[in-house]
Length: 147
Image 1 (cartoon, rainbow, N blue to C red):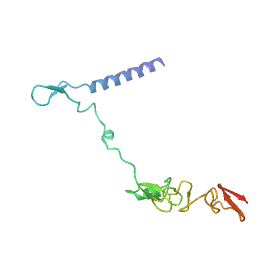
Image 2: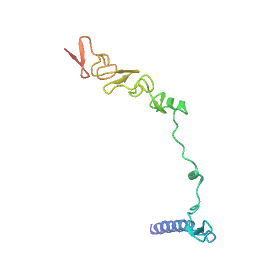
Image 3: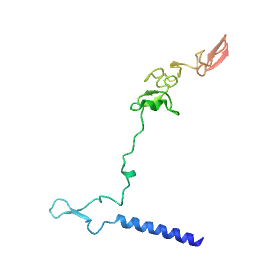
Image 4: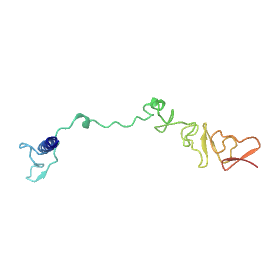
């Protein structure tokens, strides 16, 4: 067990030594560069530190937005099948895109099948979409009551 700890410690020290040696400038690479030829020397930025892999050299890919790839919205796990302002939404239930892109419901309203309704007073959508009050009752504050 003790031999394993010594071996791991030795491997870490070797890795640290290799990293430090690759980061220091070589003998033919000057630390100071004469930029304008007047004898004034300034410290130059190192051109590279160690070896850069191709993985790090690649540009990061942006998100796949639906304005470029419309099929993204139909994929499993997507918020909805419709594309509005580069976002996948469901225009049948989204408060900010109710029925069509950009149509916002008022503060007290919700979107039910593409129409903005007030669930506090609407008998057909009392408290939630398609929660109907029975005949003879009213919707008051989102609850069906007999009055």
